[in-house]
Length: 191
Image 1 (spheres, rainbow, N blue to C red):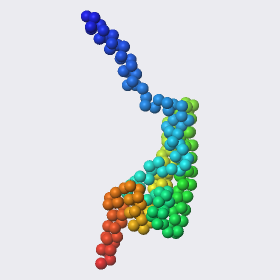
Image 2 (cartoon, rainbow, N blue to C red):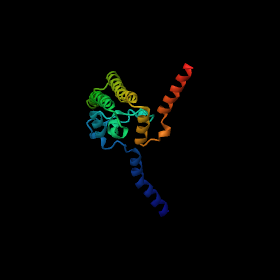
Image 3 (tube, rainbow, N blue to C red):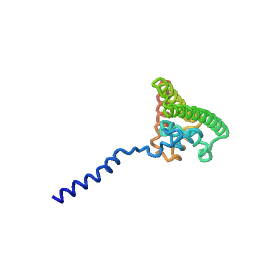
Image 4 (cartoon, rainbow, N blue to C red):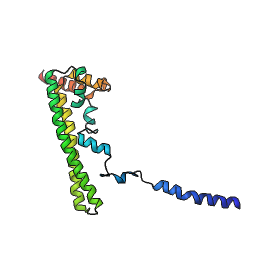
């Protein structure tokens, strides 16, 4: 009997801790952020115009990014013209990305304030979230478009070398393979 009573008391004493552990939020500590939905690092990346993974579809499919091309310009043996075009492309992309990042932060702050001040409605929620989505789309487009333009600046050999220098498997560079395939298809039409 004492054994059963001890078991019941033990279960009763540990149950609140077990339940509390199940209900604790993974967001603990984030409630003090100015914009709760964004980490300080994400905010800084938006202000700095960083890619934040927005251009992975391009980068990992063999379309080089201007920032990394500039970092690797000696290894890629960029010509003066390629350097100048890449630098102009990068500066333009960075300027646009910083502007969009600031606009996105302003909208995230507005959303935060609507909730914080209990002024959120379905109408203003829809307006702000649609604006945030549009800005994220424009920001992603800005980064992806820069990779597309950079592709045209480099030679096929430089693109392959970039892919290798970035640590990707050069034989798996689908963009270069597709370019060769498209060229061959085009040649077949002329014969």
